[in-house]
Length: 117
Image 1 (spheres, one colour):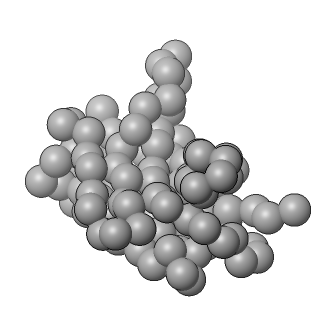
Image 2: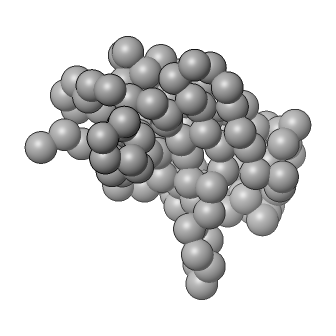
């Protein structure tokens, strides 16, 4: 069974930066998009950013100008550079891959990001 493995979370002060990484344990074919989602305590999971296989990106309004998604669908890797972090960015961050046949069917286990002084 394919797993998505995330890394790079942690504790950072407001205004700081973190870089999240995600890679598949085995090759996934027919990826049409990769993305990052997050879930804060007591809240629903929300979209943070997506990267389509053609290169187009989409960001939640709350992270535009601060976060940058990048990756390589052929290599099954996706990254999230997070700058100017705010306490409201505190959440568990999940990476996800979408395929043409199954949609957003692959999910990582989540990595905790805590922004606090």
